[in-house]
Length: 89
Image 1 (cartoon, rainbow, N blue to C red):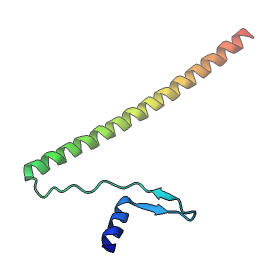
Image 2: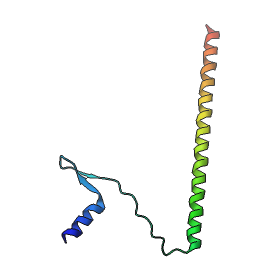
Image 3: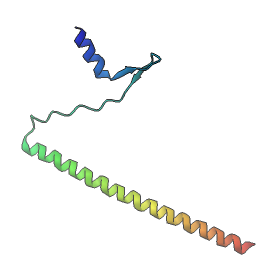
Image 4: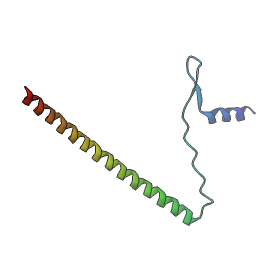
């Protein structure tokens, strides 16, 4: 019975700090059981994961492009503002 209590305590990943306060640490989701899946189903999942990786890489490229474009726009606005300010003086 004591080992059951210890196992349940570990499953919550709670720890007690030096002041006696209970702290909860994040848990990772359990690894899914895929032994019951057919080869075709596993292949379909792998295809989904591959497409997800491609999508994430494309999204990162779009974000990098947007940041570069934003920086360029900021530089152009700053330059235009400085030129306009000098002309009014």
